[in-house]
Amino acid sequence: MTAATLPPSHCDIAIIGGGPVGLFLAHTLRHSAHRVVVLEAEHALVRDDPRMLALSVGSQQLLEQQACWSASLMQSPIRHVHVSQQGFFGHTRLKATDMDAEQLGYVVPYPALQTVLTQALPDNATLLGGARVELVHSNAGYASVQFQWQGQTRQLTSRLLVLADGGSLLQQLRVPCVERDYQQCALVGLLEADQTPIDTAFERFVPGGALALLPQPGGYAVIWSQPLNRLQEMQQAPETALCLELQRLAGHKAGQFRQLQRRHVMPLKLRYARQLIGPRFVLIGNAAQSLHPIAGQGLNLGLRDAWELTQLLAPLSPPHLDHPQVLAAYPACRRLDKLNGVGFTDSLIRLFAQPGLGHVRGAGLSALNLLPGVKRRLLQHLALGVRRV
Image 1 (cartoon, one colour):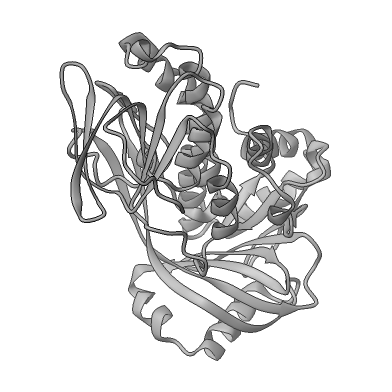
Image 2 (spheres, helix red, strand yellow):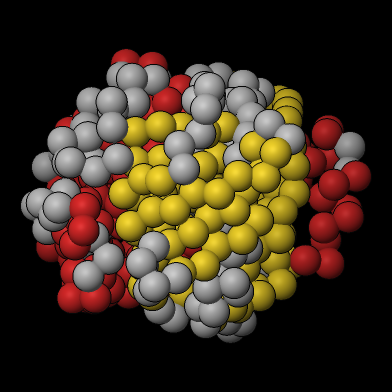
């Protein structure tokens, strides 16, 4: 990331968080009259960041509309998703053609997307890398941000403050949140494999959690959720033993597993804000909701947050950005999409965690193959969300 030589002291919209959602919001505001500042805690892009992002076709369309899409992000399309559960009959196969699309989405390395989003930022946007926000508050006329930048304490005022990443500042703004600890952790890494089906992702529900395999050249990005008490075991287990266990859980439809690299383990929780707005501030992305990765809805939901917010803000003149009626429209237009994304993800975890329902779930997966209308609607909700077009 590049940083400005001298940070501005005032702007129209201050965005806290220079991840994909915050940067995308800056791009969507390119044709507005607003001066935008993005505050990002990291000094520079971490090139070896192991995170892989599951971008839906709806997100790809939004990025493409803003010239934030390139051939470098298209190396790993998803055209098929195979969903099953270990130890029980029944599965379903979701295909892009089920919703008359060429693909359901793409698996994108985090650094690749960040590179595209940080390049050619709009002229009305300034990115401050290495800006660590300490305090936020609203006064009579402006929102105020105190941050550390290049060893000095800086102040930034803005007409509107948008929190796009994390949730550490929500307490300062007195935003009530709902949290649910799933008592699970996820092992994430890159799995080398051969004889893999082309453009196919696997979602396999296994005892204690789920195993997601997202296609990559030469193998998969793996997300394996298990009970939290296995955290230490998953961190310290030899690579060979983990590969054998993953192979046992996945079966052989996904190919032959050979090597697991760049693994790390993280706890899994649900957190979402009960209110998305306040005096001169709005929450989007991870600040608004942090989801279990089982259905790949988190980033896609956040990008739609940014897109919808811009539809409200772009036509306004700067003095009207913090008008209560304008801000009140944002939660209203995001309500159904958030209920869809958060509710579906949470319900899926609860359903497959219930013991004694394996055969019932298997019958449901098999039945989905016989209901093309239901399958089409499900895919449209997952891939496109509930948004205005």
